[in-house]
Length: 491
Ligand SMILES: *[C@@H]1O[C@H](CO)[C@@H](O)[C@H](O)[C@H]1NC(C)=O
Ligand SMILES: *[C@@H]1O[C@H](CO)[C@@H](O)[C@H](O)[C@H]1NC(C)=O
Ligand SMILES: *[C@@H]1O[C@H](CO)[C@@H](O)[C@H](O)[C@H]1NC(C)=O
Ligand SMILES: *[C@@H]1O[C@H](CO)[C@@H](O)[C@H](O)[C@H]1NC(C)=O
Image (tube, rainbow, N blue to C red; front, side):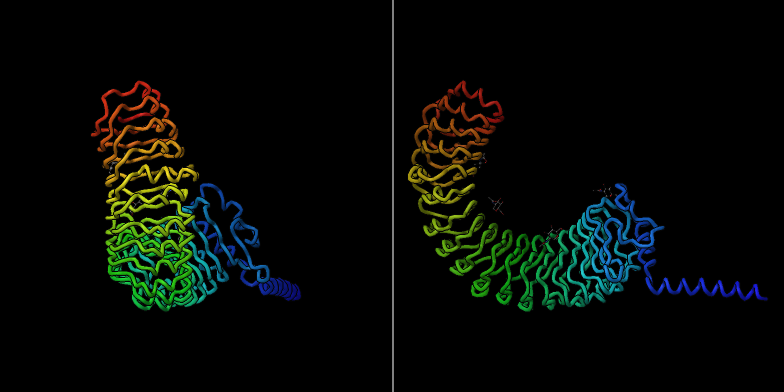
């Protein structure tokens, strides 16, 4: 009898110890168990998870695992670029204190089977650059009140973006780019007024931007690039006063731009509207956006003159207005755009002389092809010889109405890789100085009225791969020195 009682006491004692230990560290085992189950669903060919040992009491020192120092519970799982494949399994659901889940740049496949809504502490989810597929479950976002940032970018998710997204009232960053999401954006998106970054580019989305966009007054960056969006840009976008970056390119947006609204976006440094169906003129409002660095309006149906006010944008680095119906001459005020590097006005109806300032600003690329520019190119280049010419890599003035001789100062553009003056009315001889262009890959002077002989000195352009001189009045003798252009592939 006594023996039985003492055995019972011992058992009781052991139980008390277990209870005490458990209450000190209530569900630590849940985290170990959860992570081991999570690991079991993955392949880890690089052995990045080899420190994950199920016999450990705590996962807090495991590779990629971070714990909250007070609770000792797993707060962050950051396994970016670990080379993992396989599935994202239910083990995660054990990690009740998880606040950050980052599995970016792996090769995890399958659909999202779990309901992260149950992880009530989750603030950051980054599943970008994996091979997840299938639709995002409709209830995925249902309890996402704590979520600050989610990226599902660069996967193969498809179907509609769930309406439950509207529950993510604290969301600041939403990046769903480069997937196959289709249909309209859930209307609730436009009520997430904490949103700072919205990137849904490169999907199959459609519909219009509603006037409710005006409610997103925290928005810094909006990227709708490469979808099937239609309709005009609503005036209400003017209320998004913090916008720095706007990318609506490669859609079917139409109508003229809401100038009074855009004028208010004075913090904007990136404006990309290329490949849409926009019409109308670009007026002086653009000069109010004094921080713009990149402006790409190419491949639209804009018309009218390039506004004078563009000269106010001193920070401008890239201006691409190619493939539109711009007419008139480029404003002389552009001499003030001291930081400009790339100027592409190809395929418009610009008239007037080739401006001198384009050779005075140290540009890297000057693309003027297929316009109606006239006058002598010699004048424009030669009157700017004091300025450093070292930056210019690409000069294309082809298919205009330029006349006069090719300036011998061309030899000063020692970084030039690509020179196209074809389809003009240039006269005189090919200057000897082209031989100084050691970096030149491609020289096209075809379809002009050049005469004389091709100079021996051209042999100095040792990088030349394409030399096109056809349809001129040049004498037939190809200089023997051309043999030194060892990389020449076509003549
Ligand atoms: C990802 O996994 C798929 C199949 O599981 C495989 O074909 C592919 O090569 C992997 N990609 C990378 C980048 O490891
Ligand atoms: C969205 O995520 C992709 C992939 O990680 C990244 O390249 C892109 O820059 C992100 N978008 C924004 C606006 O930060
Ligand atoms: C300007 O835009 C056109 C059309 O979008 C593009 O093809 C071209 O490469 C751009 N120019 C430069 C210099 O990037
Ligand atoms: C030079 O420009 C003309 C007309 O724009 C074009 O047809 C030709 O292909 C260009 N040459 C090269 C080498 O790109």
